[in-house]
Image 1 (cartoon, rainbow, N blue to C red):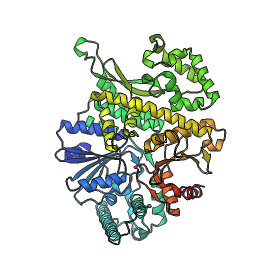
Image 2: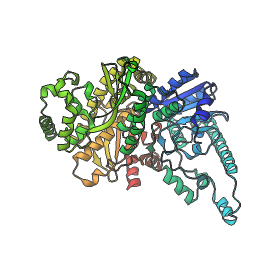
Image 3: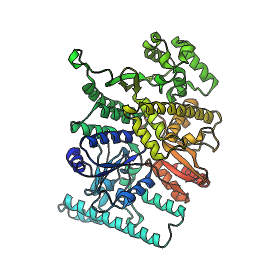
Image 4: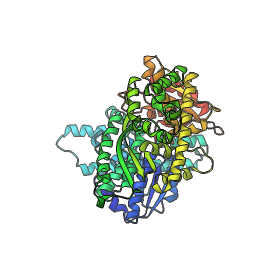
Length: 598
């Protein structure tokens, strides 16, 4: 059920308990985790932190810890599936779920006992009414025969809870029987079993839903999208508790910016949430001129500003930033000779010497830097780039260290998805989490260097794909596959990196193609995951249009295509539109996807 009073129904409940935090591997989840950690530190709440990168890790970690804890907090995982069915918890176990993934599973919404959803209800959730989902046709006939006799809401909820318990017990018994009979000994069978448990159809075949109910559920579950940033939700709770700090506000800003950088939310949603945070920034960072209120130069200062839409430009050279930012690279078509000439014309129009543009931004002449934003915006308008400046926030640590929110997002993401073999996924998670603290600026600067490498590799891979015509139209969608041995392919084996590459590739393709129909198509992209296991990661990206609502239909489409062809697929990532697939099943899977979407 949805938690309406975060203070009473969540924070005061866990304040006196030992709790376990399951945190997904994305920047927004890390920021929400940092805010919650700061609150727990204030009130001496005991907690254990466990990073989870997918459903398998979540299930394994829960089995390891379920005897020691009664209260579990899940950040950016768990809302969009039937959590009780996956984890099989004891009856007294309570889950608090703060997740941006939508749509929220209806079982989670209407479970009043074990699932508590820490989700903003002013989001456009569109959850179907209880009566439309959990009342069968016989009951409909009874109700139509006697409209005046309606069961009380409490009776309906009790009946729902009994149904959930009964169905969970039935599935548990079936799995125990299968384990005894040895049916799970084969890894393929286990993968398919897990996939079917994680993402069943709207209703099981046994219950054979009538068409009205099936249609309602299909319409509700058809598209995947994202709601309000979890970091923002946690910050607003801290504000309600009167425990919000400037650091917490910055983490909320970074969480929101992560959603914008990764195209998870619409521009309208981003601008609206920026407006909310801007009020908090004014409250926390106002400065009076009198001496009594002056702060030390080492204090943290957050400011709202319209800044350039250029990745890491303050920590790079202006030329490198222009070449490796998705927005400018796509508009200039920098993979072509003509695009390189346009870039030179752009720099000439601004009147900036190449010597200045190609050296570090910090070393540029102060006289040039003073009016740089206005000069770039003016020239960008002439070259058709109307959105060169965006609303964002920056943070100052004293005089020396200044970061834009997007800088921190790129750095943290690169630390977390680092392909370096010197540590496990948990080590990378902890390093990324530490980089968000002002006491670990060395880790943040290391993350910035990794981010530059990642951005360069992204643009080089995009240029390679477009110049060699690797993006092909399959009819209802575009398809691109990175081959084993492609330079930097190891950088794109992780889901978030591959998703970002796919989105940037689609933007560039739309700018380069003259085919109007292809401009409106979504993209499916595959990259090698494990050579020894013969698996690939496949992601689906919605069409790139100005009016795009960022809703993704590939999650359900992938599921149906794999089901119809018996393709060995694993839905292990928290985003439904990211799957793992056996390489030899790829062709029949794609054929099924084409026929399904045609």
